[in-house]
Amino acid sequence: MKTGFQFFEDFLSLVFPRTCCLCKASLFEFEDQLCKSCISKLPVTNYHLRPQNNDLVIKITGLTKPGSVISFLRFTKKGDSQHLLHLLKYKNKPEIGFELGRIYGNLLKTNGFAEKWDQITPVPLHPLKLKRRGYNQSEQFAKGLAEALGIPVIHSLQRVLFTETQTKKTRMQRLENVAEVFAIRESLYVRDKTVLLVDDVMTTGATLTTCANALFQHAAKTVDMAVIAAGKN
Image (cartoon, rainbow, N blue to C red; front, top):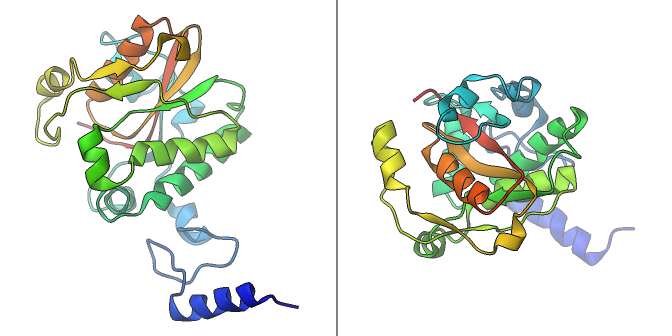
């Protein structure tokens, strides 16, 4: 027999039906944010099958100590990956970040990554931007990964300077723009740790490189990188 709360949930689902954020089809009870059909069509990169030998590793070679660099999705303009990132960053949909992290985390788990890292560290937002948006999209992705992989999220980094948007900057301008932006909260958090550093998107790799170097300066053992989507830039 259904409880009063369950009847109320049924009523809400009729008035405000849960729909897939891509195709708008009604979601089944076991689905969250994305329907199974849309998940199957996502532009998955499969970089996890060659985590140390792909074009993302090449981007950061010479800028930091390249470890594994992986991306869940291939970024394409006007494609599903861009649409999901737009909803996540600008349409107050933090739950999309969590769900993408959970899906990717389960994929990584089935491919032997569950024991690879001591902690997951999201790229931080500046406090002013965090207050404006209300959440850190990279942290939401990190939390989804953490739930699937059984690895804690540790906020090892802090953003100490507010920077302009990176969107229209060249690779060198992006590197200069974030050169002194990040600092370690506490060396103890990262010393001798294997860290998975996560962000929402990777273009030139400037932000991730700067964060990785800050972690290495405080004796992190290894720093690998994972993002929701990566494109050629």
